[in-house]
Length: 110
Image (cartoon, rainbow, N blue to C red; front, side, top):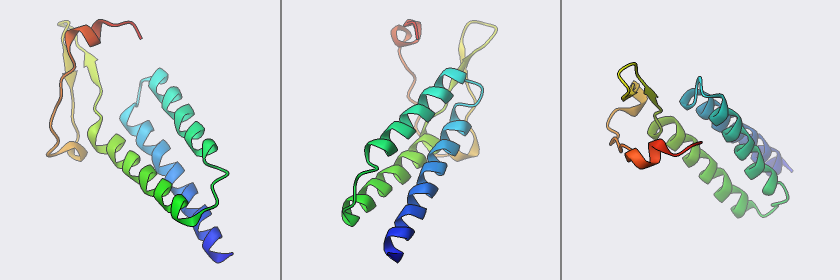
C-alpha cells in the first residue's frame, strides 16, 4: 500500500513537472500551450490502468525525461520585425545544439 501511494505521488509530481515545463517552453503560444497540456493529460490517462510497478517506474522515468527535454531542448523562435526568426535561449539551454528548421517547415500553415 505504501509503495502504491508513493508511486501515485511520483506520478502527480511528474505530471505537474511536465505541465510546468510546457508552460515555460511555450509561454505566449496559446496553441502550443493548450495542445501540449492536452497531450500530457492524454498520455497519463492512457496509462492510468497500469498496475505493474516496474512498468509504472518505466513510465515515470519517461515522463521525467520528457519534462527535461521540453525544459532544456525546446526553444521557440519568434518572427522579428525584419522578417527573420529570433531565438532567445535561456541559461537552461546552455550547451545545447541549435537545430534550425528549414524554410519549408516554417512556411507550412499550423
